[in-house]
Length: 176
Image (cartoon, rainbow, N blue to C red):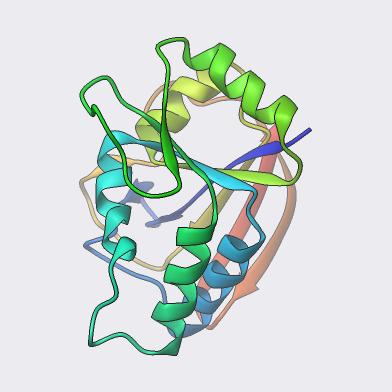
């Protein structure tokens, strides 16, 4: 059975915003390794549209960007959306019954399935389907934006923490 994991970069004051701060080269290489190991990813529409950037090669990319793009393109993607009528390569739309669809994905696959985006994570948290939360805590204060926990905060238990690069701490929690 697959494990559903929600992990995102977060500011010290609890916000996620990929435009305000990004990963260092060390953290980006960490994300490449994770993407290579994922059994797949579940996206909401907005996050999927952002990540579609990796569908096409860009001339300014270096080796790390090409490695991430290759890993992202390889893995299956499931997109939760009522407005999209089609999705790109190696992706499929999730039906209206989110809970049943995600339970089936977990039952059919092995390894880790990434959950991308705080709104989708909120819906899956309410359904009790997220197995692990990974907060990549950056020394940045935003003062605004989308919170990591977009809804009620679930009771959590810290299972591990580690430093990645010079200034990011990864906090790993499971539901309590």
